[in-house]
Amino acid sequence: MKNHPLIVLVIVLMTVACSQPASAGSGEEIFLSESPPRGHSHGKSRGGEQGHSEHRAAPVKKFYLNTHAISDNAAAYVLRPDGTMTKGTLSHGEDGWSVTFDTRPLDSSMDGVFNVYIVDREVVDQTLLLKVAKMNMINHSCDWGHKYKYDTERLTPKSINEIPLEITAGGLWDGYFHTKTMSGDTLTFTVLHEGKAVEGAKVKVSTQTGWTKELKTDSRGKGTFQLIRDYYPESWDDFNSRKRGNFLVTAEYELAESGEYSGNQYNKVRLITTFPWKYNPQRNEYTSYAYGISVATVFACVTGFGIFLHRERRKRRYREADLDEKA
Image (tube, rainbow, N blue to C red; front, side, top):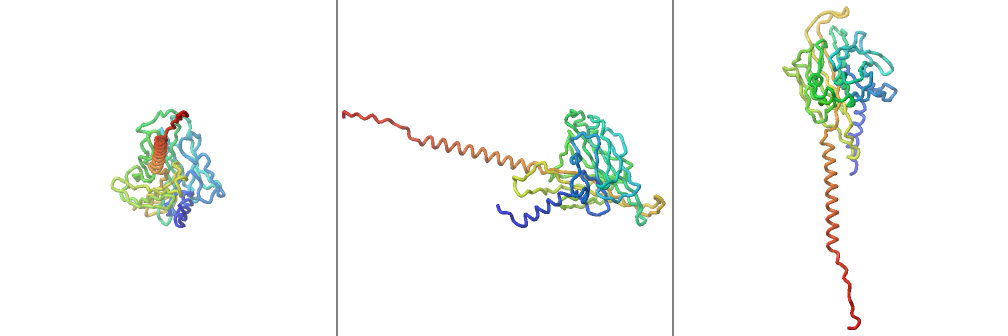
């Protein structure tokens, strides 16, 4: 099949978009990523072993912020799978701001999901701006023996009451702490203000390919959306069932409160929080292709065998002719 110019252009644009972290695009939110932000690392990907945040029992994990612009009040917090709290280390280098934290001991006691937060506060134009970047990181190794598989406590998404605004989501990982999100899935997120559900929070979902959806949370603080199916390679030969896309959920909420922070007066509080996650192509997109190949192979074999039998039956057997020379 010949390539249509428009199709080629769309594929190129999608490829370029997928090379960058998803962004809600407001310019005010901060979010965490496994790779340095655009334009850093001199054009190279320096995520290293942080390129994948699960199935690797590395003693230290490192994530990057999307911006250089955070205040001196910014701090990092980590909720570990066993329920203990610790602080992350914020540092600034050639890749911008990053947070590192300890995942030791390297055994099943740390098997599960980490909550990583960066919280930043500052007063801008008499508004107290609270920005929260949150990331869930799966820490898991099959070599640990799956001691906590199907453990309800460890599988349940956690939140921290002291965090000004955060997003939680269920169904993103399975009972073995493997990421299971796929394109086409229907996902439900909950927005919490200091541990309590927020009604009417503005929520925006944005994928790497530029698809966005906006909604408001209901009385339970929940918002639901179906993740778009956006992976369409040029040919099936190029299909990669392990290809991962990223999306970013951003929530905003305002409070009519006044006060003082760091010597600055404010008459309104604005809260912005983000939650990035990843997803694979829908399984039936490639299993149906595999089934199709299997059916076609079986059909070809059966057809070939049938033709062989048909030809064998049509063959005339050789008969010897006994000529009697005396006759």
